[in-house]
Length: 149
Image (cartoon, rainbow, N blue to C red; front, side, top):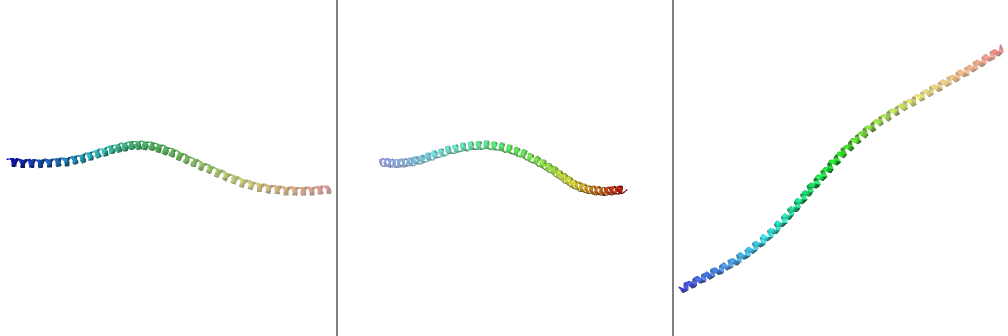
């Protein structure tokens, strides 16, 4: 009985030693898992912080986008207004140009008419001079004839 008890005690001691070594191994494994959990918690905290930062950046970007779109709409409206002003100025410029061309044409015609009138007057003056000279000669002839008579 005593041998059997000794054997059982040896077996139990062996099992106890195995259990202790299994316990030590499991404790190491648990510590490793705790470290992993700790690291994962830190990663989660980092991810949360990054997500929060990304969310804030996203909100900021949306706000900036809205602001820029409003500015773009204002600039487009101003651009349209300026385009209309340019078209109006071009139309007005074309009208003025057409008026100037018409006036220049009238001026040219008036110059030509003036030149023609000048020529006509010169001819009329020459004709009057010739008639006056002929009249003077005729008057002189009549004067001579009168003197003779």
